[in-house]
Length: 431
Image: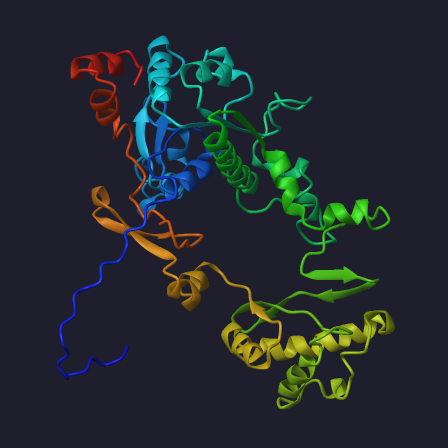
């Protein structure tokens, strides 16, 4: 930090920074999702929408999912709940009751979006499907997030993350080639479905701004996951019907296998041999560093820019990688990355959670934010904005709602119910 000058300066009027509005300021979302769609509501909330999380009386099931704050199992201390419901307000409502259905319709009149993740047909059965709600509010946009979408032979099937991940083909390419497929370690199909739902919701919103018409957005978690396969489908469609298989820490191209993930002194780095391509001359800088430590003597004077993988037997590549591997094991991720930056080489540290939390790049962009939890007497660090905009602001906001925390605000102040009526609804398990 630069030192302040002791030289007095002429006072100048303070320049007020323009207060940027959130992107979705003035819009309201009714969030009826479970874990399969909670991230969609979180994204919309962080973009400025007033997202009202609608839970069943007693609280949503996801509140029972750990880990928990200070390892104390409690529906008000679920870190899973905290993570996916930040910036939302919360009410309780039993939409399977007649009174609950009527209350939801009243809420829809003042809402712009409804997002839900029930089985196809469930909302229609309750008289709360898109056709019914569009009669209450013609501009309403309803987004449905389900395992396989609203149509098709699998549309009524159950599909937790493991099922949709596997049926999307994602599990087939995860893991090592000499072992069975594995599941990615978190609910990727839930997250990908939620993100695509947020995108679809915003596209429908843009159309509504032009036409004045609402619509039903149908999101399939399976289809959302297929989009994450990158080049695997292309291997089949475009490259001689070749099924892309699991490669683990290796990569197989042009009949040659070479390593991508390498162990080092304090973790792992990502790197691969460079041959027959622009920039491959940086291999000489890596070899020079290895030579200083008595390694890679047989790798000197190789023309990396002209040498092709197809010209080198696998045994020779294995020998080179063994020497590089010895060098990496002598150094930390940070040392290897700093050296790679100086050399303009393509080596990256494989960051863990601690590395990300301490990342100077993320710190420079104010990525991590502290959010107060008054009921815990503590603040918790959360991931912050995933984009920056010159004309709109990202909402830092507040912690996830407690069970029924905003019942009185919504039901009495907005819908005009009396406290006595609220007490009756609670006693009858409506709220």
